[in-house]
Image (cartoon, rainbow, N blue to C red; front, top):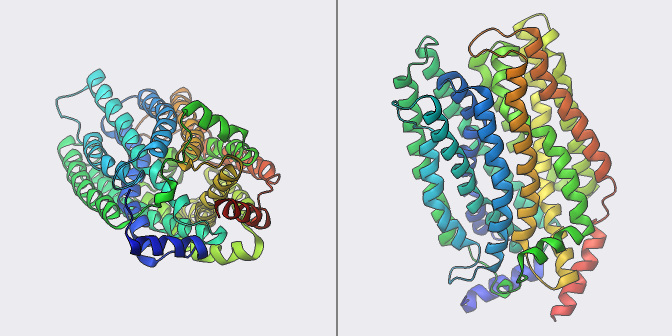
Length: 473
């Protein structure tokens, strides 16, 4: 890819100092508003929309989510490897941004607009196609975007700044998704719990079209404004199996893969069950967006706090702290079914959600920054740049864990006697809260213990970068 003299000077300045221009950061992070709006709305609402509005059996929609995440775990490595190997006039990552626009927009509309004439198996097939292809479309954008973030700067702490702002911007999109979810919940309530498909489906369709258009524009803006390093072209390994073998041979990556799987097994069920907890355990379904908002707003505003703290205490310690805080926050929610009043239940979950949100902001800032450092270790060992393969591997772990828990959750609900739109028995409530609180506590605690063995700190990374630069010179 041809690079102008001015762009070459800018790239060299970044290589020397690692400091990114604000316009570059803005172009990189802004698509997250639309993409995360879509992702959260599907993740939080589609399962309840399917069971309580479309009246699809919980096990059926749970199976769809499980299959979709397992398929994503397969497709992510493919996209990651191919994006490493892509060579186009606009770069190896932005070409995938461009390719993702129509599928993301189209499939988001699809999942929120099943034809009124469909029912039974036909409706299950429609939702299955929509959910699976929506998540596949997201892969086409998200894996190359994460990969590009690792390429934009080699600076140890500037990466935390970049990914912290990316996480904060993405969380803004997630907060907007809560507004959309509130609109959908209000549409349900207007139907006097009869779930009139005309009211709810029309509302869902209109919201999905608006979000699809805005997201397409934001991704297009990133394609136009961002630039990629020309010297990273053609530096990926030629054979996919060899690329992922290198990922597994990297001891730092191998440890993170194990930690991420344990973490995500614990966290995957949280998104699936939050609306169920709000309605059937807390007893305040209309306040579900408010509960989630208390989590999201803390996650969005906290990255500027964690960035300087990472300089003082180190990224490794800070990520361990976020794991423990997350586990304790959700673990404390197990007490909610035993509290005497709905108000007590509401206040408890909102306070704990604040701490969980702070922890999420820390993890969202630090985790991809550390993962980017691991990719530098691979370059030091192999002389190659294969960010796509690495972030695909990390995403593979996340989606595999999510797929497993999505599959299990629906069957647990069905086995314990869950009945849509009815007051749930204490057995069902305890089953929900065991998955929602105790399980994350155990998993995050185990993840923190395993991560304590991680050794790629700032000093080690500095030596790696010096060796890479000396070899390049």
